[in-house]
Length: 291
Image (cartoon, rainbow, N blue to C red; front, side):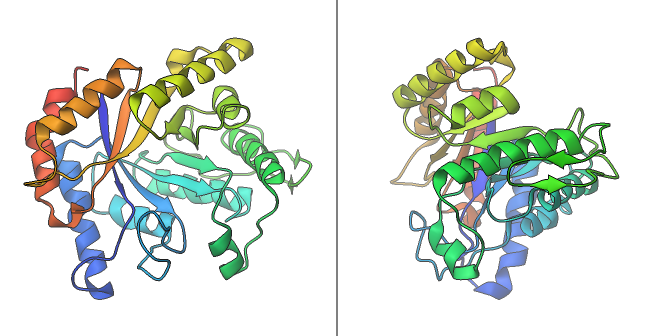
């Protein structure tokens, strides 16, 4: 089992002036402690689940580039980019740049977007859900084309690119892993089966097991080997006295592994304290590697 770290919150002691050094310290420690992957949300306002919209929020790809500069091994991605935020061609170029500058460590996480408040607030498009799913599928097709030898035009219903040139190409081969986030059974998981290298799901093991069964059914219909998909979940833990122990978290990992999860991505409210990351490296990651 692989263990990832998501950092969804940047409102830490010291205010805005301390964010840069705190984030760098988190990234370096996660890298040194054996975390497989490091993720930020791609939002512009803080989301309600974490805090009020006025709380500090960094732009995702700039934050990932800063963390790439202070790490050597850890994989880097957004969990996940809303398809409405950036034109597909520019988005793929951005992910490619991160991959090249990080030495081939970028992931491309993408989803249909849901946060209407920030889109309206900053003036980005937010069409109806059905259209957003059409945008998502075209974005996935554009990514595949830009990360290939085909530099020709792309003609979609919503996006038209006259020349899908992407130079340099990513260092990751055949391209940065593509993650489609979400558990929608009719559309999202079908897109995972058709285009993606990874899914990202939420919920407890029983719910995740049900979603993976649906994903496998989509794979079977499309002729895709289900075992080639990196099955990931996002979960929250609080490793601290009086909260959760290392054994509690190891138990979570075992429960997810039992239903077919290969990669658990944790966020934690006390990540800025650094000690929880060091304990993960000593006590948890070695214990779950062989699950």
